[in-house]
Image 1 (cartoon, rainbow, N blue to C red):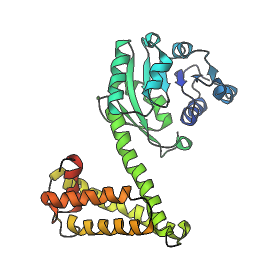
Image 2 (image 1 turned 90 degrees about the vertical axis):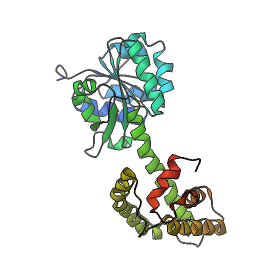
Image 3 (image 1 turned 30 degrees about the vertical axis):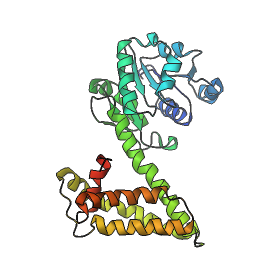
Length: 291
């Protein structure tokens, strides 16, 4: 069954790594695994994976090596001098900064390996689902050559040759995601100070989150063109709401970091002469913290 399927090595068997292995096994690929805590491989070996005894053995087993680790430093810690990587394709699906991705691509190239940076944009339980997608950057021909395998994880979205771009896209999405979750909890705490239970607020919160996407296309156009007409939602008007949010949060005795950060954006935009411009003019003070 596996004779015509590409062999794959997966190093790192946290929840994401284990999900990747299971998707590959289900598709009939021979999979070799290694993890610093050997016991994490037990169930996968029972399902058909091959356990490598060392990282070098794991790398030697396949031409395609997928890394699912805590960060890029873990790659160096596990692979050591990296001499075993010669002739291999390494796809690092770990999270780190764009600059670390660029450094890793150079490090791999110096050892004779081809390197792709990846950022998986779904939680581990959705790996392989039709909603799953992964950002990739690096040599396009490397992605194309291994696309059938990588597509099993999720739709491969190529964003450019710069090895740092996949991480930058990933982190931009995390910027929205993590910020949104913290803001939801802050809003829940704000209402909770008046005894409103989270489940009562939930339907309105969902409606708000769903509605925010309506504003994004216009915002992207305004930022692209550098034109911020403020007839409907000026920075001055929106800033007044930000001031009220800080005041209400202070009175409720809850954390002020997020509302004060938002208040600062509007106050600085107004101070920079954008009071009559749209809220999208905040991009100027976000891009230039000195304003």
